[in-house]
Length: 380
Ligand SMILES: Nc1ncnc2c1ncn2[C@@H]1O[C@H](COP(=O)(O)OP(=O)(O)O)[C@@H](O)[C@H]1O
Ligand SMILES: [Mg+2]
Image 1 (cartoon, rainbow, N blue to C red):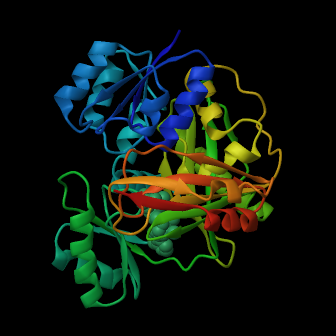
Image 2 (cartoon, rainbow, N blue to C red):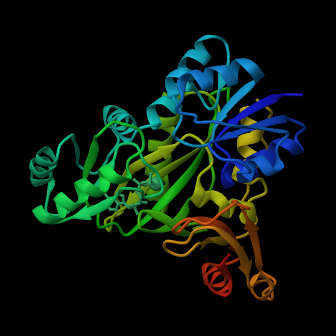
């Protein structure tokens, strides 16, 4: 029985754990808080700060897992590089996890591999942000190099807004590196996630592209297949293949692209793990992104991935500034439409706009209608 150490225990980790448990794996889940979603379905849980180098070493050496599987970016990745050197297997590879922990490392790598990206620069002070933004263009996106789900991310088109963006980024950043990426704002036609599968043999394959819509830098809904032209798919697949082969290892990757109005494909970012917008695959594919990751990371053969039906997913969010305990209402009403399914993540408490669940449905319209019927209600 393979032993998995899952670093991060959110909703993606929960579904991955379920897939791994179905394959008979023993799963130890880790996160900074108790009773996190994946912990509710795993064999064992460890609660600690994964940015604490010594503690992370201690946990790895205590359990001696066959596979170390990161689910989040906020991990002390130096430990993973060292663990890999010492014979542990990090999924997809310690290099992939290390390069994607911060936005700057992976962006620099994409550029050096010749991928098309938005014009970008970095800044470590407010003044530097002002001068770099000026060189880039009229409107820019500003993001801390270490953050996720839109935290600390904003757009600016004036000096005053840039100053606000600097403060917002520094307040929203994770870790202790005061550094932001400032990017040309891309007025894209649409954006996609291309789930890209890398097997141990070096074989690369793809799921159908997933379209998605973001608000506050955070995913709101996604659909599969995205209506991309053959040309767009080809360009995105080529770029994604270049990236994953460079990063190496085995697993599924979420590769994000903007598609501009002329059909240009612009690499945005990459996660070396299942992707939040890819939850739709639980409804659409013969094997979900979680089943695929579980198969590939353990080195099992993977059958051909097929889109069985079109579908969409829509998040169920807590309200702005919500805290404390909660209940979720309206699911029965949403399920009156037979084409609707759902997942509730089981997060212990509310936070502002926290993602509490997801609706899955056979079309975006159905997913949106169903999500409207569901509400997250605070209770004392
Ligand atoms: N340069 C940009 N131009 C236009 N929109 C952007 C840009 N950068 C980010 N966005 C929007 O913000 C979303 C989140 O940004 P992303 O870099 O993917 O951060 P995260 O790691 O939080 O997902 C993107 O999916 C896109 O909708
Ligand atoms: Mg993203």
